[in-house]
Structure formats: C-alpha cells, structure tokens
Amino acid sequence: MPPVRTSNPAKRRAILAIAIAAIALETALLGMVAPLLPEIERRTGAGDEALGLALAAYAIPILLISIPVGGLADRIGRRPLLLGGLILTGLGSILIATSGALAPLLAGRAVQGVGSTLSWVAALALVSDLARPGRKGEAIGFAMAANSLGAVGGPGLGGIVGGTISFEAPFILVSVIAAGIFAVGFVVLPRAQALPAGEPIERRGTFVSLLRPAVALPAAVAAAGAALLGLVDFVVPLDLDRRLGTTATAIGIVFAGVALVDACASPPAGKAGDRFGRRPVALVGALLMAAGGVLLAALGGLAGAAAALGVLAVGIATIFAAAVPWLDDTFGELDRGLAYGGLNLIYALGYTIGPIAGGWLLAGSGADSAYLLIAVTSVLLAIVLAIPAGRRQI
Image (cartoon, rainbow, N blue to C red):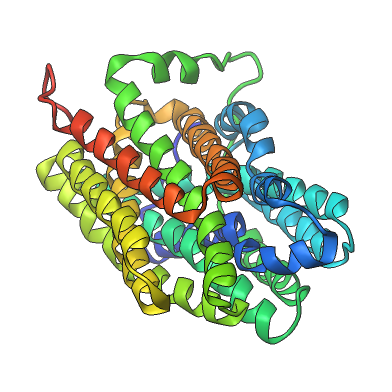
C-alpha cells in the first residue's frame, strides 16, 4: 500500500492526533496494572512469578502476530487495523474489569495485547507516512512522547483511578477512551486502496532486515529499553508497597509525574537525532538509564524513588526517540508496516523479558538487585554505542 499522504494541513493534524492518541492509549495498557499488582496479589493469591506473567501477558501475543500484522498494514492499509485494534482494546479491558480470578485477567490482557498490536503498528506507520522531509525524528519524537506518556502514565492511571475509585474503574475508563478514539477515527482516517491481490509482500523481509548489521544495533537498543521499562513497571510498585507501604494512589501519582517529564524529553531528543545523528543521542539515553538505576538502589523514601524514576524516564524516552527513527530509516516506504511490525516484536520481546526477570529477582534477591541490573545493562549498552562505527550511522 502506498504511504498515506495529504496536502491538507488540518486533515494531516487530525490524522496525526488520532494516531498519537491511539499510541498513548495502547502503550498505557502495558503497565496500567502495575500499581494494581498488590491488589491482584491479594485477590488471587498469586506469587511474584505469576504476577510477572500478569504484567507480561499483554506482550506475549504481540510476539506472535507483529510480523503478520505489519504485512497486513502494507496490504490493506492503516485504517482497518487501527480501528479494529481499538475495538479489541475495549473488549479486553471489559474482560479484565469483570474478572474475579487470575485466568480471565490473563485472557483480558492477551486480548488487549492483540488489539494494541493492530493499533500501535498502524498508528506509528501513519506518523512516519506523514512526517515532513528531514524531520522524521522530530515527528516520531512526538509519537514517542505519546508512547512514553502511555508507558509511564499507564501505571499512574491504574494507580490513581484504581486506588481512589475501584479496581475495575481504570479498565472501564480505557474502554470509554478507546470507543471515543474509534468514533473520531472512523470519520477522519482515510480509506487507502489496498495493494493488488497478486502483488507479493515479502514477510520475511523484516527478519532479514533486522539481521543486517546496520539494523542490529538500533534493534538491540529498542529491545533493551523495553526490557528495562518492563522491569521498572513491575518491580517499583511492589517495592514501594512492601518497603514503604505506599498506597496505589501515591504510586500512581509518582508515575503520572514521571510521565510528564518523560513526554517532554522525547520531542527534543528526536529533534537532536535529526541534527546530530541517532547513535550519540542513544548513548546519552543509555547513560541516563544507568544513572537512574543506581539512584533507585541508592536513594531511600518515596521522594528519592520519584527523583530516580525521573532520571530513568528521561533516559528511556531518549533511547526510544533515537532508536525508532533509526530503525525506520532502514526500511522503504512500501514496507513501512512491516518495519513497525518488527519494531513491535522487538518492543514486546523486551517488555516480556523485563517483568519476568523482575519477578525472579524480586522473589530471590530483592528490588536492589533489579535496580543494579538496570545500571549494569545500561552501562554495557553505552559502551557498545560509544565504540566508533565502521561507517557513518544515520
């Protein structure tokens, strides 16, 4: 499918607003249950490993369908996938809200994961389609601001709404928001023509591209960022609850504040990538993540945790603002859906590993070991990024 184009500035802004809203909503679902994990633990009696699975269940189906969904976005267009994903997001949220045991909650998270895959891939492809020449990093930076706002703000939404109203309330709210975006998108999103039925799409192209040396490094950067984000979303709320007795509402407020810092960092980081290159910006992000991990382990109290999370969130935002356009630049316009299917696969892989690793560490050696793992992993990533490239990096 040819990339979406429009010469109408108002139409372009409306499409981008829908795409960015969908990105924020779908990414928020990743960690929205994080501050509610203590409540899920009390309701179901699940152990740390099972709670890690509850957080990761959202990402597991993404591992299975991202590549086919990316190819489908190139075959039938962005609109049907974005709208269909919003429907599944709402249905999965309702399933979680009405669940009284771990099994239906996991099922609801999986349905959300499928819906997120459809919407997230289509929405990011739309943002890239509509980016002005020479300003792709800046455009994707705004998308990553929404992505980061959702990823860090999701726990804030879950904690504040779930803590002040009820466990079910944040999931009902997500269903309402998804319905609203769907209604506007149904009217605004363009109906693009599909590729001819006989024209082949090489679905293996994403895997082949990700194995190329030029793509391997930004893919690894994105995977590391997602894994550390997942680890933080899982470990920090449980650590604050067990160590400080912090309420779900307070945890939500902390994550909401961090989300604002995170979202503010992404656009300038993307713009810096356009000007100075993606690699040095990613290096700065890795160093900030390392500092955030050390601060999480070193600082005590809720204020210290909030400050450490702020540093870590800026690092994660910077990492993604560099890595996503870096990956995008390696794909052609006609297989952009496949490109973001591959990115979604990388992101989900990292976010699946992060909470599971966090559960093992939390059950075995405690939260500080998880925070030090963030620091060590980030330092290793920074070392790799600091090694001079054999050729000029984008």
